[in-house]
Length: 145
Image (tube, rainbow, N blue to C red; front, side):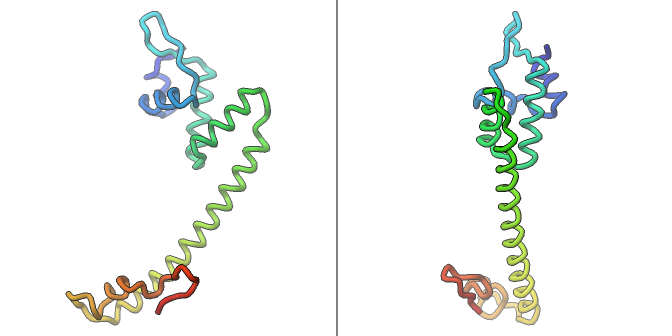
């Protein structure tokens, strides 16, 4: 049995976060020592390490709760986790495409802006282009130029 400070030290999870995970049900309520201090066992350490690792992989707390609930029912959560992994990979691929598009737009704007004058009124400079949305995709799918 370890106190919350040692649990925090062993897992790298702040004590405040550990308490939050208890309140939200990701960790079971801590047992209490005679002095009313929270105490944790090896199962709590393993569970917290799983939560921390899953968060590092960008799983939401709700997704982690579902995985743990499945395991707590003594059912293997692996199929569910594989689906979540695929969903996350698809989301990341979409974000990468969006970032690549943004990079292209910023590069084009930068190249155009290099040839424009300084303008405090922002009527003939790169700031004007930003203001009017040149190069940005419009909601109807067209691109303004």
